[in-house]
Image (cartoon, rainbow, N blue to C red; front, side, top):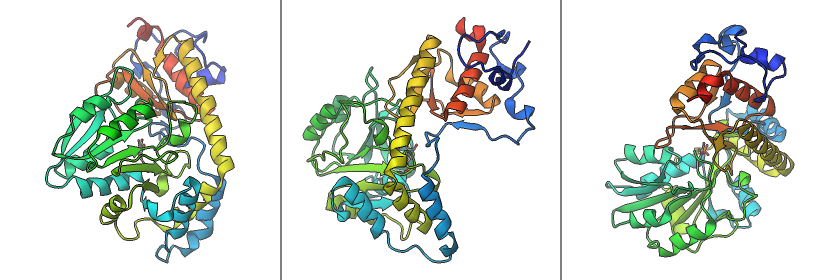
Length: 379
Ligand SMILES: Cc1ncc(COP(=O)(O)O)c(C=O)c1O
């Protein structure tokens, strides 16, 4: 009997102890995709692919969007209030902050500012790829340095890759797509040895999820003495505002000036400014999301252990799961069952990145995993 994901869930089956016959083959084509059962196209896919906040934005941020919707005939007003608010959260001055339409807009500014004339970007692999795409589109060269065996940045090798051509360095901590940390001491040692003229982005997009680890200290909480440090943060993760495109950078004035020259006028819309302010103020919502993510992460590890799988130590709202099989096939299997996972990871062909969804979404994730059945286990 072939049992579908939805059927499994109706039976209340979510763990490895599920008493159903596994499908006879690895391929999921014998299973009816869930979307088709309820009428193709009528059911949204479960999105475990982009590390968004599964619990949405703060209701206060939504209320601000609605409240300001009737004024969008007007150009956005000044972003000073949001800049001041961010600065006060971090105990710094507003002029130490530059806002952008997402932290990736800041990265794009940095690429334009510092990677002219074929200069070189040094970054890890695998890491968050967008800055590399921006750099290549800008005619820059790239030095990609493999992560260490513990999936931290290999900062000694990255330092060795720095030369007179280097225009920019990118460090993502915690790292996407691995979810792993590079300890603060190693980054400090790296920055001490790095020539002062080299700007370095430290991307803290997942900062709020990393809180529990002793080896993680934000560069906003304890700034670096390196004059080229550019710390980026986003409203797309814990604040749940990915669709509104809001991020910011903290850096020394000369660096911020160089970035600001590359910024488009009024690039942040009025609804984003309003929602950003409300999201920042709703610390209760943020704390709840952090707590939920901790629970979701622990539950994910429990399910991994129950199936004798392996997962990298996650300090984020996603996990990098060893699927012991070509990731491409697993991603396709999930796609057929209307669940989207992260893309294939360069150099890690047997790993998939799974964003943590709400508990009911994760029950579906594991039910679809279990559809792989004995065939996968035998591989
Ligand atoms: C490491 C990292 N930085 C930045 C971003 C995107 O930031 P934003 O939406 O602020 O441009 C992401 C999104 O997935 C990310 O993983």
